[in-house]
Image (cartoon, rainbow, N blue to C red; front, top):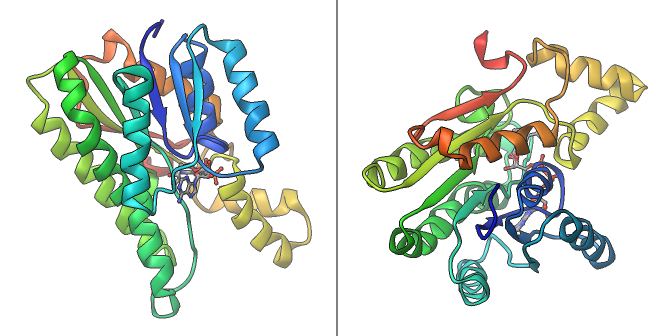
Length: 259
Ligand code: NAD
């Protein structure tokens, strides 16, 4: 159980971040939810998470594009809970286009949200983790932190950067009771992937045909990973059993990176 531990999960109003928040709440952690969305749905999510944990659930709408909002979010979390014991850098966006047509503003946003925000949260959370003598940093990278696919230049660059940052932070904290690891999901059915399915529906007619094509292109299991499976992997990385795992990037990808 993670009773009295506090977890900040960026981008957790939806998809994988919400799956991780749900599994950490089920372990009794305090939860700081972050991300965008309809306020009534966010209120409902807070209520559902609150039913899972004896800890407290709060929400912060900080935009991971904005350094001062990230700083404010960490300050608020420290004021409310004293420390952030578990930091999950999950917020991420995608854009699919060839490199010569790739909008410069999309490149900048993807690097800022998918990579630089993790640098900022880590630099802001580490001093208190060190004071407390315990910490778990989990970066949600991707198979695209390990291998590339066409038309995803910014995403592949950011996720490879995040895998590198994971190794570097693991070395800076190696002699402390702090670990830093990356999770590398393959295709997982979330709103982010739905965009790529919708683009294929236009060519193929049906949603099932689009899903089959998407999975058969890359994921040998031909099955999506689930957000709860990824959440349970995060719980394992927070456990004492994983205390000597640091600096690694763990794929959950149905065999994608085995090819
Ligand atoms: P999603 O779109 O369902 O969720 C993204 C979350 O990030 C949402 O809560 C959204 O509100 C939040 N977010 C977006 N921009 C933000 C910003 N500027 N500031 C704060 N929050 C912001 O996507 P997902 O599929 O759950 O993706 C989560 C992470 O997993 C991403 O880093 C993504 O790259 C990674 N990932 C996803 C897959 C997949 O197949 N779904 C595969 C590999 C990696």
